[in-house]
Image (cartoon, one colour):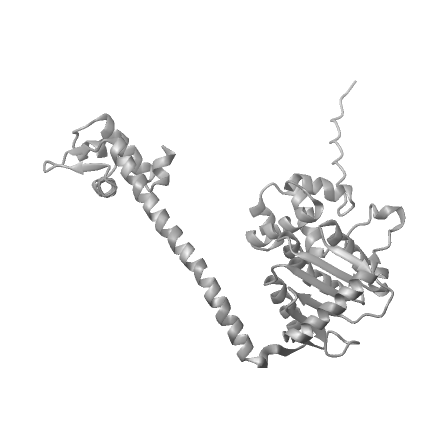
Length: 345
């Protein structure tokens, strides 16, 4: 009977409908007596069933049951009609995209003021990076000569993993300083394991990031990229930036192989992620784990999804095992058995 529930008939009303199928012509009060319902509850249920076309009430307040095959078929047609209307509305909305996109292009062409924008301050720069990454649909290209600060890695991880999950091509060329830094190196190899492409170059490169070959970000001062940056949308400038990246990419090489093949090198984990993994191994319910960490259930599950993606785990249990195997968290020692009570010989 779950099909009728899907058609908008609550379980308690379905019980009443089945009662009258088995007892045709009974008065409404009889059902109330059978179920122990008060008059208002019975009246409300009868009104809902009548509105669905499943029953009719006679002048004597007896219940006449409609043929189930006819009544249910009518409900199905009604639901299908509503579904068709909703589908038509969605299709109509998608047709508007082309017109809106054309207006957007026209507006950009008529308003050159926004083609170069200055963003000041590290927090504002990070927010803009996150926004541009969120609206990327095809490709990210970056030249990153310097090591990344731990807070920068933590800030970038969420957007980088989201892009990789969405199938966006993620290409980055790094310099010697980035490769020599343990935290940056570990993060780069983590992204490579998830489908990112990273190359290494000895030549001098300047920091820049390009999204979908249409927007570029370059620092105002190459030696202090956290102070201020320029967001460039001017087509000619971005095209030259893309061409420069492709030249550097073609002349670069794969990341140097770590000693021992890179196996067993734990990635740079944040304190929050370590806590998530620890709680994951000790708690059965997500709700309890989220409460213990002091975060919302949605936030906790987002952390779990990101960690599972990085581990290549199919479920939470496997994620905990893989994390222990890779040294991300320490396996807990089993509790020693309780001493047996002393017995007299």
